[in-house]
Image (cartoon, rainbow over all chains, first blue to last red; front, side):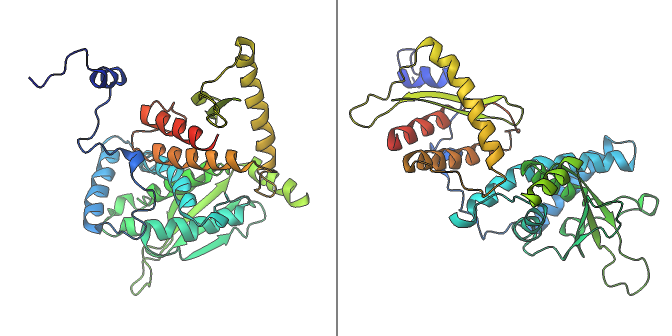
Length: 219
Length: 112
């Protein structure tokens, strides 16, 4: 008889917890956080999964804005968790959390991008408009997530990199720099355009972030 | 010596609580808090966090951390990161895993 009687201590403690343990006894806590540092995943598998994620979001949306919001929300928890994971993978002396906007954006441009896409983001810019000092731009000439996404003409406002924008937003929120992040296509439509899929991730920080930054700068 | 350890979420909500005693110098690892002290613990915890919250924007270094406490926190943090790696874990959710609790208890025995 394989069923253990109620007298078995092991069985009763497991039932109490309502948990099922993996057959090899190894849980998430037994696995090292560094293991897959250089491991790469299949882009084809990702493209397939991502296209399903986009159609899942599309089926439940009535417009482009809502679709982008749903994609953003799918990315957000990933960013939150990625911040902790990537920081703990850094060598001990550079494990500090980013304390100012520039350090945070560099962390995203270099660490987050390299982890996700195997290369850095192409450029980092600050808004030159004096009315919007809270806006920063992370520029990717050819977002990996859009490689196999064809946007129909009537939906040309849509950029599925809203998913990546959600990841960035999660990193910012997790680092206590609350922000809104949106993805915008800026590549030209003309023949011979070098980067037709060029995407700007517009990072708009909440007013309190700039307020704090100004205060800390003085101190 | 008795310890009260808690992880607090961003909405000031407790995610995890654990009381234990020292295992060094012949301690049996049991917490010995009086009923009043246990209530006081939460006040001490939150006012300590207020201080940390202010200091975190300065040098990034906590002043004069005891080596043992630091090691304890590092080990627990590593396990916390593993806990949040679960795709089913949402931010600010209570951590209920008995294995996480075991890991915290082990770190307590090892360092404190």
